[in-house]
Length: 166
Image 1: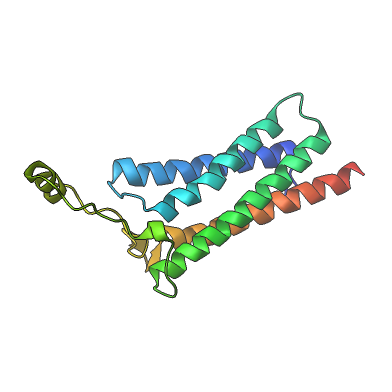
Image 2 (image 1 turned 60 degrees about the vertical axis):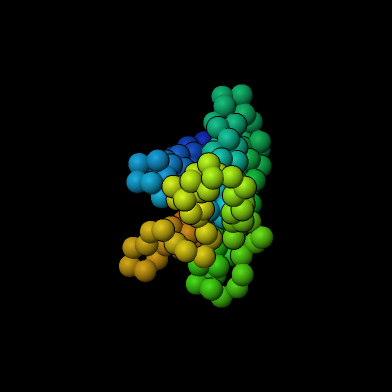
């Protein structure tokens, strides 16, 4: 692929990046037992949306102009994800409070069986406690530049491809 990918090549790269991001999140969750908080789950949504848009852009019957629109929508999804991830980093760093869902409410047990179940269950994940970090950077911290880079790539690919078509 050249330095200026075609809209089809750009869509393929976006799809691969979405698969990589979602695969990493699911591997961390199911392979290493890192339970995601609600903000972690919110960050997966734009990758699902971006991946689905990229698949639509890769369809053989997708017109060139349609691929450009789909790449632009991918860029918007990834810009939104950059904001979600940055918000999550701020919650982890205690710069601001998270959403109401960030502090899970544990119901008060009403029976001995519920009490035993509550005692044996791991505590619900909190948004302000990163379960993993590398060099002091959490997964949300790594997601900020990743999503921003992906947003810029998708937007610039759509713009450059539009210029080439004109």
